[in-house]
Length: 216
Ligand code: HEM
Ligand code: HEM
Image (cartoon, rainbow, N blue to C red; front, side):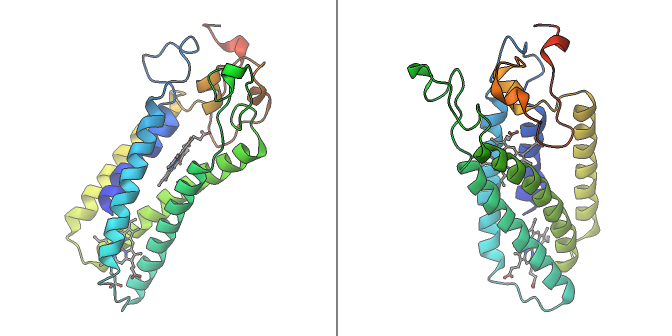
């Protein structure tokens, strides 16, 4: 659970949030960098698989004999339910569209993401807020789990130090403006693209206007 929810899944979220455009990429000349997309799915699928294996093991031993074990169990189940929601929403997010999308060969840019259809908008709200909620609940489950298992203190200290490191990295990436709107990372800032006209979804997500962009 620590490997899945303490390391792999948080890293996958960090990559999805801050590596839509990679450091050496010349954006917007180079659009739609798949780096974040590949690593987000790899890390989240592998992490969730490991978490399910851990769950299968732990349900055979859980007694929920103490109040703290019971609370841990509730937080743990909530975390796993959110993981299922994240994967389901990801799989059901709809089509892409745009100049390289499914219908591009037929001259149509139609697609749930390109057109920012209701389906895509619902996906983005559910997936972004659900994902952060999952991380927060998982973090509390880990801390409480260490007490339930009466784990040595150094484990708690190492995990807390690791989270400080992740927090500092996220803060630095956020302040350097790396949290770019997915839509713009894929299709650029041109207001001709329909999604650039609607409100950006998420907290602290940066969108560049075509005139502020030095390369444009
Ligand atoms: C986000 C991470 C975690 C999740 C999702 C999670 C999930 C769960 C769940 C769902 C249960 C209850 C199983 C049931 O009701 O049959 C459980 C029990 C348990 N977990 Fe975790 N867990 C996590 C982290 C940890 C950690 C870090 C530890 C300790 C190192 C730990 C130790 C335990 C123990 C000892 C039990 C059995 C408690 C009892 O006897 O009732 N868990 N966990
Ligand atoms: C445990 C599993 C998962 C978690 C916890 C998770 C979490 C997240 C979070 C928190 C974000 C938003 C990052 C941000 O910009 O602040 C995100 C973005 C995204 N995730 Fe996941 N994710 C998971 C699995 C998946 C899967 C399986 C898919 C696809 C099949 C997927 C597709 C996406 C997409 C397309 C985005 C970008 C959304 C956008 O910015 O428009 N995720 N994920």
